[in-house]
Structures are given as C-alpha cells and as structure tokens.
Length: 343
Image (cartoon, rainbow, N blue to C red):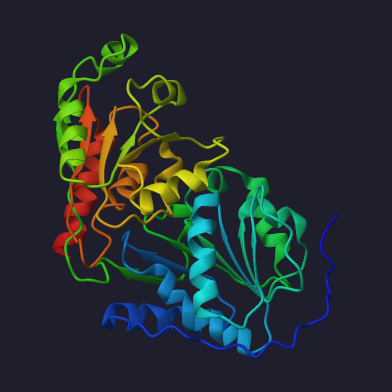
C-alpha cells in the first residue's frame, strides 16, 4: 500500500539547533546546494569521506521545512540511516522525523522529514518536495533501475533529486556540482599502505590467522585502539579463527554490535563491505583482508579508508590493505586519496 499522496500537514514550528561552524569550503558548497534546491535543479555534492557532508545539508533541509516542504534523505544502506537519524533529531528537535528501514518500529504522526533506505521509497508516491540521496553510488541503488525509479516516483511534480557522495559515478554527474577535497578538520586523509599476505585464504581455511594480520590485530588490542577488519566473503568472515564479534548484511544484531564497538565494549569487529559507509567510530583503525579481490573496487576501498581519521581528536590512523598481489583498484584508490591530499 502506498502512503497517502496528500496527508494532513503538521503544525510543527521547526527550530535549528546546530551550533557548529562550517569551513569556507563547506559554506560555499552548502550555499551552492541551497541555490539548486530553491531553483529545483538537481545537484551533486561530491566531498571526500569525513568532509562533513551531512552538515552541509542542514541549511537546505531547514529552509525547506520552514517553507512547509516535506523532505526525504535516502540512502541505500541501513547503517547510514542509523547514523543520520539521531543527528537530525538533535539538529531539528521539534520536527517530526521518521526513520524507515527494514525492521524499523512503527512511528506515529506525519513526518515532515523522513530518513529512509531507498528500498522504503517503494511505499511512497508524489510524497516529497525535496529528496537527497546520500551515498548514491552505493550498492544496490546504483545498479538497480527499479530503485532509482522508486526514488523518482516518491517526489512530487518532477521535483529535483540531489545526490551526495565521496565517490560519484559518471551517471550522477549534473550541471550543478560542488566539490570538497578536504576534511572539515583540515588534516590529510589517511593514505592506505599495502602489506602482502601470501596464501591467506589457504591458511585461514586451515584455521590459522596469517602472522602479519595476527600481529596487526594484537597491536591494536594492546594499545586499546578500536579496529575494523574487512573480509571479502561471508564464508571467510564466519570461519575466521578466534573469538571475535562479526557482522554482515543479514546479521540480526548488526546495529547492536556496531554500538558495542563505538562504546568501546569490544576491541574490534570483523565485517564485510556492509560497513564500508555510514559508520563513524572515533580513532578506529582499519584492515582490509584480500584487498585484491573483485569485491573491493576502488570506490569501496576509498570508502573503507574513509572510516579512519574522521575525528578532529584523532585525525590520523592506520589503514592497511592486506593482499595476495596488488590490484589496479588498490592503486587507483590510493592514487585518488593522495590526489585529494595534494589539492
């Protein structure tokens, strides 16, 4: 069943409580986005991981809410929605906001601001005045035309759709674009280093963690540094030797386990690419096992690297690509990060 096309409007008096300050680059991009929103022209906000993309949306969202418009911020991944929802609640405390994702509880009232996975937009038709698609290049959105059509169907009267990502595909390019190649705290992006892990798949099938990887994990534990280890397959994840918390796309307690890591109640987490985006853990260090495998595209590796050094308190950190041979995608990801740092 589709949501009613013309539901009753709420009488919320929207207030904006964010007290942060945008950098000059952020301010410029935010103002450019707002102009596009007001002119109903699609806009691409391309900004490096950790540039503060969400904060750049605040002025546009607030302007729309004050004008009585209904706003949707959509993303392909549930983890992104779980990160965004509490942030919007804090910034717009008197606005009715709903978070829609698989397994979400029913929420009462009419929401002026909806934060939803792109799959949830199948439920809407002509419902939103403005839609922002965060991480628009992420799977499955970029590869699923029916999902893209669902987003278009959810907006009113051919309203513009705006895209936000660090790694835009050519299909997302628009006439109106803003680019930010620097993180909000001004520090360089951590550059991945390559470390050989010959025969890792064979060794791990025998129940052994390769020495380089074992030493890396133990070092993080010793210094109480939270860590993420990305693995290329669910099978390798589930069969990884040792007593580790682990999550993948279908894991029922994914949200809870990420929270445990954030609250430093566990030392680290094993994961698939499901956590490549939309997760911020202060001072986290990251290892990619089998970085040469096809699942780890340059875009995925850039996003994974972007988990490191996001906090102004911990702007640096270790990102290592463990591999059985260096791939073109690994080189491409590293070169892109180095290029952004030079800019």
